[in-house]
Amino acid sequence: MVRIRLKKFGTKKRPYYRIVVQDSRKPRDGTCIEELGIYHPIEVEENQISFDEERAKYWIGVGAQPSDTVRKLFNKKNFTI
Image (cartoon, rainbow, N blue to C red; front, side, top):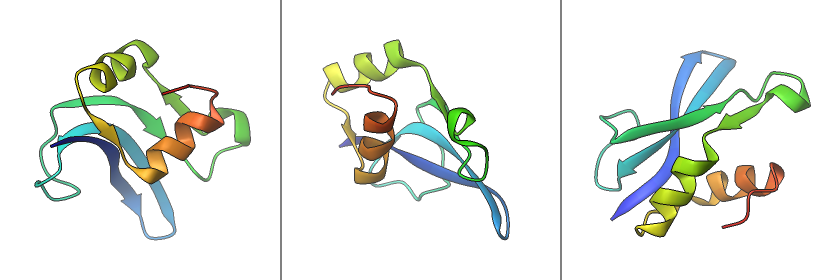
């Protein structure tokens, strides 16, 4: 199954994440199919989340399931699934 989930980068206590489309059997930091956006939890509120809404709609349309965390991030940006 294809999932939309977070891929972790950064250093200890300074994480940032990429929102990626990835096979659910792959490891978290493994190869991904496509990168949709970024999530910086340390940034100020309005700069934390950015992603390509058109590509996210496409992937959800063809059956990709967002993880619980990504679903919460999408809801924060008022992106309906």
